[in-house]
Image (cartoon, rainbow, N blue to C red; front, side, top):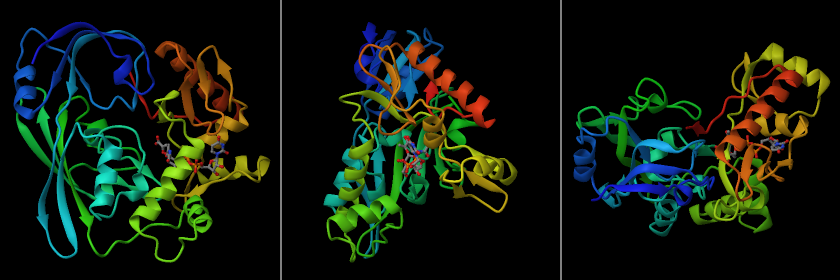
Length: 338
Ligand code: EPU
């Protein structure tokens, strides 16, 4: 365990932004993490995990702690279910593939989401009708203030759409070290109602009782067809949340744009795809230097190479402003800005 100086964070964030950490340390286990937290000379700490949901707009003066804690453990098993405890530093998609290999069901719809296991509860990652809150039983975390370990039940996490206590009342107070998932063994309940999944399964003649692998393969194919691979083009997945608006606001926009896609959230609220708003505001595929809006999915901002975090942030603000002027809707950024 050694603190290093002036380390580039380019390889540690999926946007590929080249900023520096003044002081950087990688921790391999919870004990090391606690030791680092107790170092008095650094009162401010910056936790870096998979770096998949952040936009770095400046050098980091705080002590950057890179969570490299690995390990997967089956802690209970019966005929129907299995409980798996996974360390924060495990790569999310590799964990999904491991589950499929072991025939553990429940997260196949979440295939290919960038990031690590430790950050999946923070924003309650979700895709194609499944959210990670559906399978999380417990989240173990270390308090930054005093190094104490606290276990959060699923209820304690207060999960919502791309939301949890870790983004609200406990923001920057805990470091998640382990997540426990309850997954199915023989009784998988695949969720395939999402149109794109249906189409992909039909293409492969797999609509009759698809296996969890069939569903995962379908999700991988869909994502690869429209989302950029961060290894090739820097990005952070959806940059904004899909806004939820009142029925009145929705009906007004629908009058003008009858083909606008939408999802009913409740009798009084409707979710509008931010990707559609951004495309309709004519940003899809636009490029400003090396900062751009992805050509196939307008909700994804991209770094074509050497964009700075500031340039991407300015593009995001420009999009917010234009969408607001056109639709009177405020887009909220999903990605954490530093
Ligand atoms: N759309 C457009 N133009 C675009 C993009 C989308 O018109 O450029 C329209 C589509 O035609 C479709 C609708 O918007 O009718 C929804 O698009 P899509 O199915 O691609 O999903 P999304 O709402 O844009 C959300 C999640 C994704 C997740 C997908 C699939 C959020 C913020 N994003 O995107 O999650 O993979 O659904 O379930 O909720 C992420 O959070 O990083 C992420 C990729």
